[in-house]
Amino acid sequence: MRVLYLDCFAGIAGDMLLGALIDAGVRLEDVRAGLGRLPIRGWELRAERVSRKGISGTRIEVAAAPGGSIPHRLSYQELVAAIEGGGLSDWATERSLAVLRAIAEAEARVHGVSVEEVHFHEVGGIDTLVDVAGAAVALELLGIERVASGPLPMSHGFVECAHGKLPVPAPAVTELLKGVATVPLDIEGETVTPTGAAIAVSFAESFGPPPPMMVQAVGHGAGTSEWADVPNVLRVLVGETQAESASEAREVVVLEANLDDMPPEHFALAMERCLEAGALDVWFTPIQMKKNRPAIMLSVLAEPEDAARLADVIFENTTTFGLRQGRMSRVCLPRRHETVETPHGPIRVKIAALPSGRETVSPEYEDCLEAARREGVPVRVVHAAALGGKPE
Image (cartoon, rainbow, N blue to C red; front, side, top):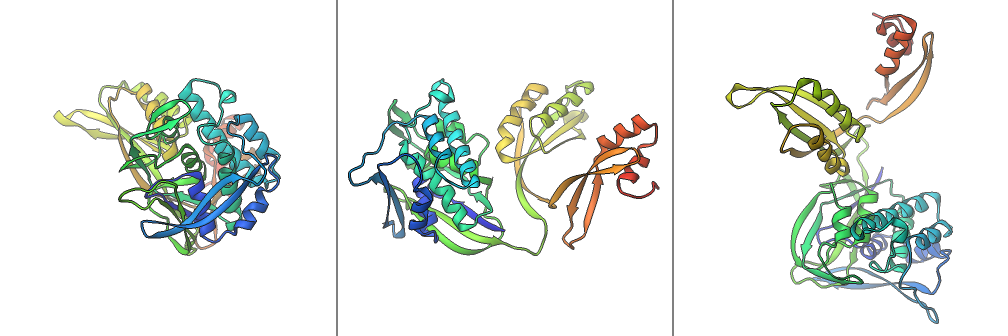
């Protein structure tokens, strides 16, 4: 699998990512050609080699074309229309729209308006359009199948915008990075822009160390500002994941709480609410707490981007005043879902590919239970029929 890793040690912005992808081997002419049918005119894409604290990289600029002019203020609907009418591939169109939607929803929450009322003057309108669509086009040209990212650096200070002086990270950035791994960075200035944050959370499947891969290309995209102690570049690594195993480690979050004052009958609903909110798994473990009090430890497994939402669900549906949160790797087999016909009706099954190339099948328990009740037979009979054999 072809992988891109975002090494955001100095931050990320839309133009930095596009510059890094071009630096990693995407031809500028191919990106221009991919964006050539966007219905908004008057701009051109420029690239130059620059140095940031001794690191050479590509600096991207969206500038007015000769005789043209760039619109400063564009609405969310105008940008969506431009993407939908821009002649991009279905994949690039879908990814670009997801990034724009993420920015618009964050800005809408910050300013207390509807998504339809959001205007992109904060992030440069046409710059946002070109950065977002250009990144999608470049990723497709590189054949990237998966994106992972390092933690995003949180700086400090203030930034001037249409609303006046706002704190750094910008409010829209803090909205976008809920549930995302971050690290502090002692820089006064904006290291993560709304466009950069939206691209990271929309494209990246995980935030943490680089995945195991054979690195084939490295690119550096330069930012506009010059920091005193840190080279203002985004580094990207392009490579292939190792193919020895059919499984692959993915980062997950585990949320835990010790509960010694919650009625037992309330646990079932807490589990149900967590699963409804997107938990990958929920389980209870009997434990002994201080003074030998018996208690239950609630554990919730979640995708990193869902952790903040699930924490709220746990607080709302349990008696805990605090949570532990940890990150770990989860290895899963590639799988697919099918429906098989049995004498007891259709049953859904999960089919996983083992590293040896063989497949293992697991019938869905709820389907087997429903059929067993309906047919008046033991659930093991339905389970065996779904596997194509006889019950033990």
